[in-house]
Length: 167
Image (cartoon, rainbow, N blue to C red):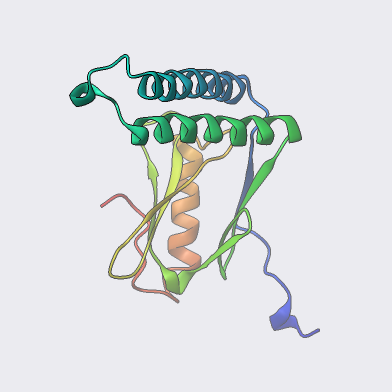
């Protein structure tokens, strides 16, 4: 294995853990609410208690069951203690299993209106997508400024298309 094949040391690393009370509460609300509304919608349509022109339709039922499924997904991540890592280095950004090379990234900035600051990356392409990079602790103002200065110094000279500050 050559030196070039080895991963460079990270400039920043953190993780997001799903085992939080807010995830559990949201998951339970989505499961209970989505299931109850979905069953009510299906039963109302099948029994004909609603006037045909006011019938919520099966798409409402499907939407409610989709909410319940999302709740089950969140509950599964809570129970399993799922963790999503974030690592920024000279090659790019790894978030969970997804790797974004610097060539694919248009900008990396923080949501400074939030406390603590949360990182957001915007992909390049004909349809740029904002990818939120949640972490357990977020960044303080000083940490965010230090990270942006470090990236500006280390990464920006190699990739001049990148923007590291809010637009």
